[in-house]
Length: 145
Image (cartoon, rainbow, N blue to C red):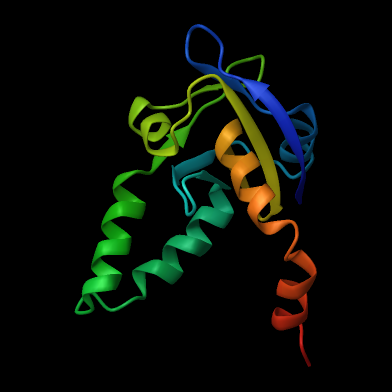
């Protein structure tokens, strides 16, 4: 549903605009609400409400008797908040999420099928630079039949 990589900037009021392509997809799929939280690899994960509920059910099913499950759920859900867009498609990222992802000004917004990721530009460049060379090797390992 969400695909591509887009460079955007946080404005002086701390707002981030969602790429036009993502706004179009959201409108065509009747998505009115998103949830954003701490993601992996120092980025933020943003889910439509429907996808959020799917992920929430998976994570709630993890046994709270396992320390790693408790830790993951605490960090993941304590960082979550509902996102509301203004008329221009802008969102206000909470300071604690910007701090977590080390977002200052420039961000890369990445569509990863069922979710959107928001990265500090330098963090994305570091991640991409590290893994682009091993992309084919990773594909071979994951997609072996």
